[in-house]
Length: 185
Image (cartoon, rainbow, N blue to C red; front, side, top):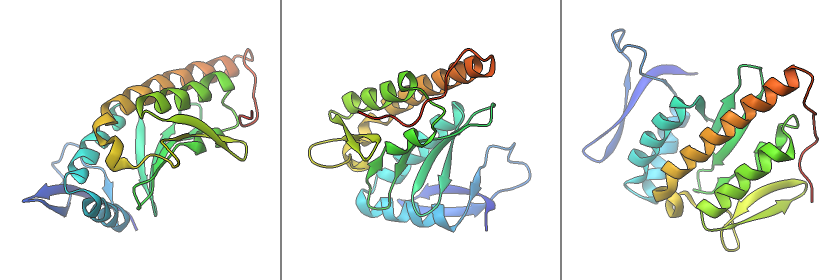
């Protein structure tokens, strides 16, 4: 069940409050999944929930919405009806970027640069699992605690990707673009 509410950090603790009718629409849906997610993130790093809340405010400004399930999914729902996963932060703090390829409507020219730019930003590399590309740092996917200082750069990369998705969808809508399957070698 999703309820309207506000998540705040007060005296170092995460507090979920119900939204008031005069909140001007600034409050977003909050559910038990988001509460427990932020509690787990606080266990990884006391400062992480505040950093993530600020990050989520910024990604919302570019049209990316957080979706709390077992993990935090950063989803862009385009005006053309496409739904794109721009990254998933697991409760263990792992950042997975491989699901952008699930949107088979995206061409290599749109999806791959996003992954490559994130790999550079996070000081990692692009790797492949099955047919999907993702970012690795060392021998694993990045940990949110290790890249927390790079969240503003990630917002910038998401903004570039959202613009590229819109442009590609506009081309496809005009019949000028092509639909490609998920990326491969």
